[in-house]
Length: 301
Image 1 (tube, rainbow, N blue to C red):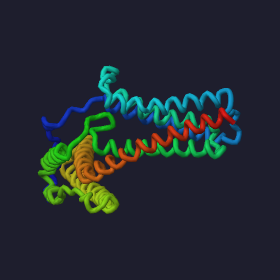
Image 2: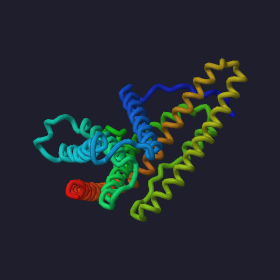
Image 3: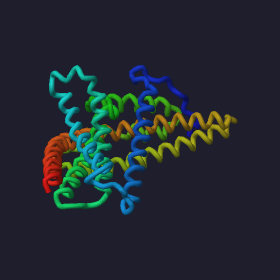
Image 4: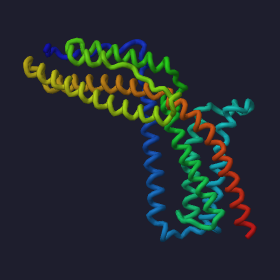
């Protein structure tokens, strides 16, 4: 085996440059998610000792605020479809606001209800709201699978295939001096499930493909690390050099297999996102109707 180590190749000109904006957005998302999870955990943990009253004071105000925030969710689809609203800021801003309101609103309602069940009409309204909120989180997951990031443009299968080929070529160049690993990489074929055989079958096949690709990625990484270690021992390379080469190999392998998994699941998640769209709006309308009935019932009786 030739133990010359893979050298760092130049970044292809076709690959888009990375910016710190995406990292900041991911950090902000993680901080927001952690804060919301903490609020939910705190409310649930102290539900037996809650001093909020749903019929007056802060508890009542939280109900009004939560319901108002849920109604404001309509602004995002209206911004996309109503021509006069095109001047009210970019769609990206409204989408981000839609995501935030879809989380903050339900939490306000949960605190309004003190994380407890109540009358029949309030329970129906609560479960409808939780269903819509859960549906939104599922839709967010599907959305990321067919877009360039959470706030990026809609992806296409051709773009993903081109990106996969680009990363595969770059990785192959890096592995020129490790022919055993390069041969296994070249044998890795692009795979795309047939969603016309049924979404359940396609989903199951995607899970299997994901497990196989992670196993192959780990296998190639271990082989590459072994080649790096052997080369470093025989040539007297420094520990810093070894760490750098391992980092390069881990990064390039990770990027390639991530691109491969995205290609494999694109058609499936595109189909699931379309099905989700058909279901989400009726659920939202049902939530509004049950919420209105709840408000009327509370104030009439």
